[in-house]
Length: 159
Image (cartoon, rainbow, N blue to C red; front, side, top):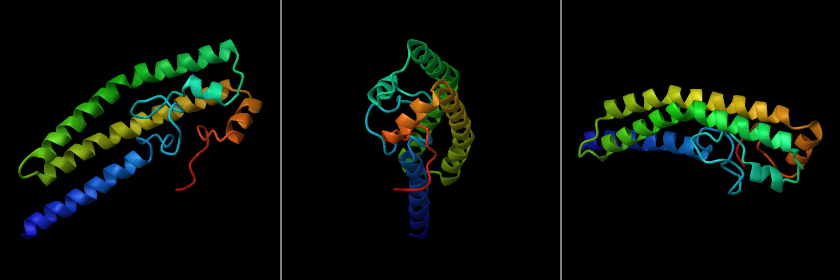
């Protein structure tokens, strides 16, 4: 009975840790409180959806659109191996959880293996976000932020 409680307790803690990351928009920091279409789907959303930038009324030049699209594509190409590895680890983690008697040590090892990959992916996404920010003019950034575009704002706590 004590073993079951210990496993259940550890499972709840792990679930809370994992769900906290999901609530923080897939470790990207943006997207958890955003409407559909404001970020590109993916592990971390390093690119920014041009459709969202258009809806924000930024009047992007064709050159800016091309640069943002190129930066987004570069992010997804560079991050593909990391995202694939994370997906494999997630599937392995699901398999471990699905066992009749989940091995707590193996689950923790798998989560520990995933963490550096998530950190690296987040760093890549932040780098891409900063590059995209440099493409926009100060007026466009101001307009984006005043329109509720929290894409480039650092999160300062929960809402």
